[in-house]
Structure formats: C-alpha cells, structure tokens
Amino acid sequence: MSKENVEIEINDITKTFQTRDGEHLALDKVNLDVEKNEFICIVGPSGCGKTTLLNIIAGLLEPTTGMVLVDGEEVKGPGKGRGVVFQEYALYPWLTSVKNVEFGLKIKGVNKKERRETALKYLDLVGLSKFADSYPKELSGGMKQRVAIARAYATNPNVLLLDEPFGALDAQTRAQLQENLLTTWQAEKKTCFFITHDVEEAVLLSTKIIIMGTSPGRILEVIDNNIPYPRTQDTRLTEEFTELKNTLWSKVYKEYLKNVK
View (cartoon, rainbow, N blue to C red):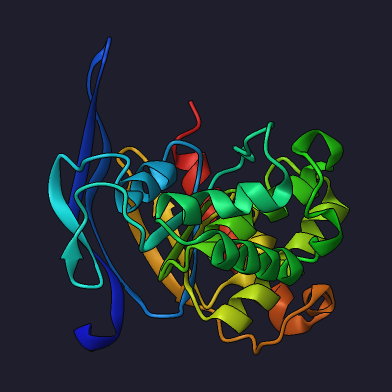
C-alpha cells in the first residue's frame, strides 16, 4: 500500500491501564493502515480494545507506546480533521437541531450565515431538514443520532470515527440509518472507522473488516469486502452477503469462545 494514499497510520500501538488487580494490557502492538475514503468496520468480542483504539485515533486517549498518524501528522489530542460519533447522542438539549449542528462551526469561527447554510445542508443530507428547529426532546432516538452524524460531517473532517452509533436503536431505525450513512459516505467521500458488534452491519457497510482478538487486544485478520456498492437492505438477501456474514461470524464467535470462563 502506498503511504501517499494512507489516511490513518496506526503504528505499534500498545495501551495499558492500571486496575486494582494490577496492570491490564488493553492493546498489544496494533498496526494498521487505513486508506483515504475507506469504510473500515472493526468487530470482535467485548473487551478486545475496539473503543480504546478509536479513542486513541480520536486523540481522547494517549497510547502507552506507539503512535497514530492522520494525514501524516501525529495525533496528540482531538483535532478538527477527525469527527466522532458515539452511541450516546451527546446533543445539547437546550439547542435546536440546526444549532447543535452549527456548534462545531461556531467554535471554528465560521460566520453566522455560512454556518447556518452548512448546518441546513447536512440536516437535509440526513433527511432532517423539516426538524431543523426541533429540540432533542422532540426527536426520536434515530433522529437524534442523525443530528449527531450531521454535526460530525458539518465540520468537514477527513476522518469520521463512529463507536457503535446505532447500537441502542431498534432494528427498523438501525436499518434506515445504515442506508442513510452509506448514502452520505458515498456523497461525501470521508474515511470512516466504524465499531460494531453486529457482523451483518459490518458486512453491509464496510469496504474492509478488521477482526480483533482479546486478552490482549490485537488485530487477528483483515478481510476485504468486495460486495459492490450501492448496498441496501436487499443486499442482505444475496448469496455473497450470506457467505461473508457466516465466515465473519464464525471467526468472531471462535475468538469469543476462547475467552469464556
């Protein structure tokens, strides 16, 4: 892989935490290159360090050893080139949808007219233009998460980091937001780093799937996903989808069983 096209370089990342039982090795020598505009999905058993790795890329955690580079620059804290979406919506309850999306732009010093236009553009992109003036308490869970995604996109990051953003949603809303995210990703051409426990979700969304193992957290395998885009929920019905899903599930479940006590 040419480094010229690499967006994220994860170089020998190790992370340890101090616990009451002593030192816990959460990540052990993780190495990964992510190309520009790739949609990477990370799967693996609970405790394999998926969220820890995402937080290090986001600059919210420091690695114990190793480094992460984004666009050739070492990550030493949060940066405007990385947008983060968590499972919890993290919206400001006293702000309307459009004001929530505008918030990051306001911090960046974007003028009032431009940030309003940008916020409305991304609310429209996620299908919420009619709810621009609604407050979070007036929105469903799925709508709140779409506002959070619009807010992440609005600041025009090169990298979008998503930590199980649909994990708390019902199946129908989750399916709708998966398609919506795919449409947005194809329109905006961002690099996406997406954590999920759902192997079907990983197969539906990704260009590449990373399987992580636990005790300690490490990369076990990188799987290319060659199912053609555009993908919809009907893609789940294809033989190609079922084959990849079953292969992935078998590998993840095998790793899970190794750690069942």
